[in-house]
Amino acid sequence: MQPSDFNNLFIREVANKVRESQNLMFMLALTAEKNDKSGTINESGRRAMGWPAHITNWYQYRKMWNVDYNRLYHMCLISHCSELEFFFKVLFDKYPHLPEQKNNFYQKFGMVIKELEASGIDFTSVQADINQIKIAFQVRHIGIHNMSIVDEEFQRNTNGLGASGTPGQPYVVDQALVRKTSEATNKVLKHLDVNLPPLPA
Image 1 (cartoon, one colour):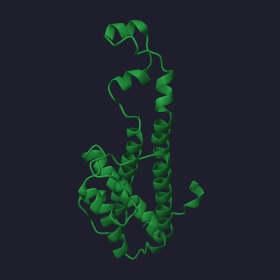
Image 2: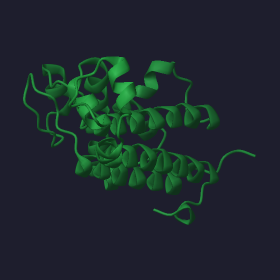
Image 3: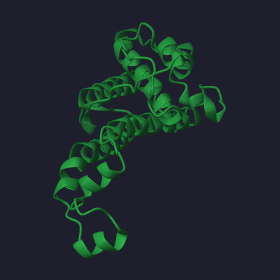
Image 4: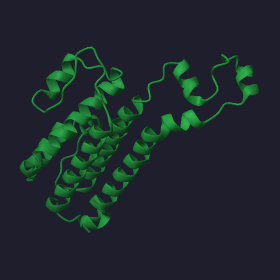
């Protein structure tokens, strides 16, 4: 979506920030491996560090330590959800008809939506997008607290939302999931843009 698609100036500002932060993280994830393969390591520096002779670029260096480039896609979702969490905090601060909440409330996406529903916003038309963001928040949780390994809590919290994962294995995050989450967020932000009252002067 373009900035001109949003009428509420507050939502427009948030949508711009979320989009551009996501673009930054996504471009890093897309290009990191290729950039590392083209980034040569100075021979004298390699010897000084005591690295093996086959370490001639940053890709080989990171692989020496078993770095997983796919983890950057997980970081995209972690960052994206953190942006949304901060947005919800500011949203509840700015709108006097929304009740004051404790800080840990805003990371619980489902509870935030329920509170907004209680304030009169109907999310039925964007329920599939809500579900997609719920999955992202659950991926964020295991990404931070369980190195993205699927556990019983993740399966319980995503049951019926369309997420699939193997217990004991990392949840697969790829370009498609990152894009899908970003598109869902745009639709939910647009829904709020239409349904929130103007900010008080």
